[in-house]
Image 1 (cartoon, one colour):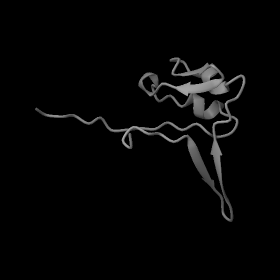
Image 2: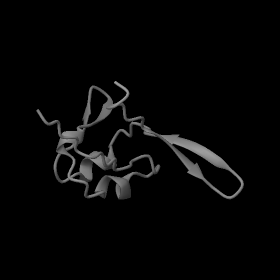
Image 3: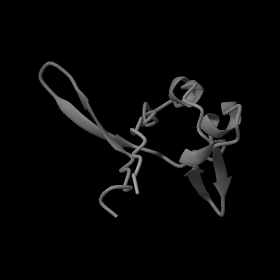
Image 4: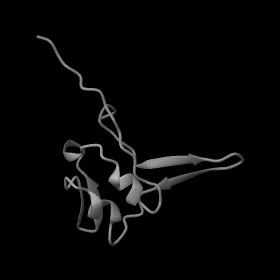
Amino acid sequence: TPHTFQPRIHVIKGVNVSTATACRQCEDAPCANVCPNGAISRDKGFVHVMQERCIGCKTCVVACPYGAMEVVVRPVIRHSG
């Protein structure tokens, strides 16, 4: 849905040039190797991020050699009634 879709394409802007980067599905997945909560896993050849397990420590952001990881903070919406 539009409310839960999290694209994994990021734009890196420079002074005179911008470029898009995305997860390269690394064979050894450094982001998954450093995640202390197991929020990132590699299964059937794909790297998966389980947002509900993410604690926001950003170790994956530091570990990604391509700058493709980003911690997405979404507000909690409470429904009354």
